[in-house]
Length: 250
Ligand code: G
Ligand code: G
Ligand code: MN
Ligand code: NA
Image 1 (cartoon, rainbow, N blue to C red):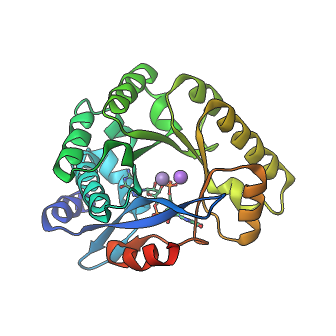
Image 2 (image 1 turned 60 degrees about the vertical axis):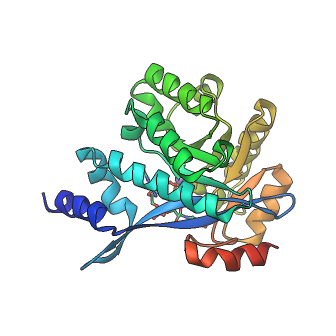
């Protein structure tokens, strides 16, 4: 397959890069960290979105070596910032099912020297479904390394609430579909309020994704949401642009 061959070459030839998107504390406005988002600079097609190649990478198993690269790059970037900011890395279901994944995490941490608590692994609900017990033992191994675990795209999968009770999540990322119509749809406001309240009671950090307007931010603040991420604070940006961002946040 052409895409598979191109993906192998991309890894070998260094065509992947990471962009980082800021995450802020809602109450103080302080920068708390970044989400690392994979980009592919294809020699002919230009910048290719992960949405267009992650599925094939999953299917072929190439996500495992690509994911290792992402982990190592992200930890190295965060260690270089040296300012105690976290870095969040997306973990796909195939990676979570890989017995050697904790070794890859350990290696990325030791190569970079990054404090483990500054690495956050983002997992979707759907990654837990296929093998609940396997996912649980994997999560416990990852937690024992000292890193944090976030549930990504919360509300878009199945059995969200049960998973919050069962699995040791440190953070919940509320899917941007709920944030998008926060100002217009009463239902979304009610859902965000309920999730934020639940997270508060469970000692889980709540993060709203896809925050684009000041109005949305004000509503999130009123609901007691802990953290926010979205174009309002910054788009995913190459690592060279981050010093300017650090300066802007003071
Ligand atoms: O950054 P963007 O909105 O284009 O990302 C599209 C999708 O790709 C998102 O669902 C995001 O979680 C996913 N994604 C981005 N980077 C990575 C990565 O490094 N690994 C995995 N597995 N998914 C990623
Ligand atoms: O699935 P995940 O939540 O990891 O995907 C993050 C994706 O959301 C990235 O592709 C990123 O580009 C996108 N994103 C980040 N902030 C915003 C935003 O404010 N609005 C929209 N529409 N997308 C966003
Ligand atoms: Mn994510
Ligand atoms: Na998400």
